[in-house]
Amino acid sequence: MKQVVLVYSGGLDTSICIPLMREEYGYDKVVTVTVDVGQPAEDIQQAADKAKILGTEHHTVDAKDEFAREYCFAAIQANADYEGYPLSTSIARPLIAAKAVEVAKKLGATAFAHGCTGKGNDQFRIEYAIRALMPDAIIHAPVRERNMTRSWEIEYAKAKNVPIKQSLEKIWSIDENLWGRSIEGGRLEEPNYAPPEEIFQWTKSPMAAKDQVQELRIDFKNGVPVAIDGISAAPASLIVKMNEIAGNNGVGRIDIMEDRMLGLKVRENYECPAAVVLLAAHKAMEALVLTASEIRMKQRVDAEWASLAYQGLWFDPLKDDLEAFIQATQKRVSGTVTLRLYKGNLSIVGRESPWALYSEDLASYDTATFDQRESTGMVKNFGMQQRMFFALVEKHKQNQ
Ligand code: ARG
Image (cartoon, rainbow, N blue to C red):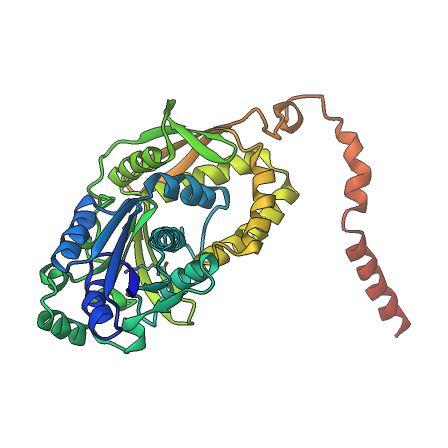
């Protein structure tokens, strides 16, 4: 029996893959796998319902905790940022692929299918992860392979009795998980079109957000958040709670031009309330405890990490190497950050840590512990080469 594991979201692209796999690709059995990384419960249910109608063997895999712990928290430690985007969709793809591989291994399947188009980044992320974890896998990407258009897909779905009512109603292409919500498509593709209020679901408009400052304390341990306002929470619930708090204050909207892997520039809108707040707080913590040269080096390591994460090279050995450095630095990233949220704004107003490399005694203008006279020689010799250069310029002028 020929079986294929379809990475399934329940949307139009992946749903038409079901009849296609049977009728055009020659598979007897289609196994659909939907991975729960924190998308709305209705979406998970809808995928299961559609799979049932279309007669697949369906698996829903709850990976929320693993996603929060191993992916979102790794993103915090690496200050995840690609062109202003906290990598919310990107980091979920390797985990989704890994879960599909787990199901395939259990069933003894070696063929996969996904609904990615040939234009985006997800095809790279999903295929790279599947091949890393199962080097001989066969992977089908019908939407890409057949150069499909949306109208062809709709006609095909109608002909094959694939339910598409929800897909037809959708104006926007949305991808959602604990770490953020990506909104694309429709007029949003025009870089100069201001995003209408209706695209946002997790964040209040800053104008409609409450007229009161909300102050928060976030506790970090080894570079990851462990409590909000003194109340400890497990990774997934901490992120959910932070999405709610920050979203209510209108914090977390991102509107950028993004350079995709294929070189296409696209306009992207995101809502990432928890990510925006937790990343800002984490950076404030690092600024207090890491040395200046550690911070400089870490910015380079973080940028490399973000580029691997964007490309979906999650299982690349370089990522482990970078994370060895990141982990070493995070041992001291423990303490508390205080911040204020107000109508779309976020400001850090305090930080403390047992590892603070800060000494009030040394920095203050008011104490005598620092003998200022000791700076004299250092200041005099600072910029030695510039001084030598200008002296030479003078000398050569005189010789002319
Ligand atoms: N451009 C982002 C990325 O490649 C997000 C894509 C989200 N997809 C969507 N259908 N909204 O990571």
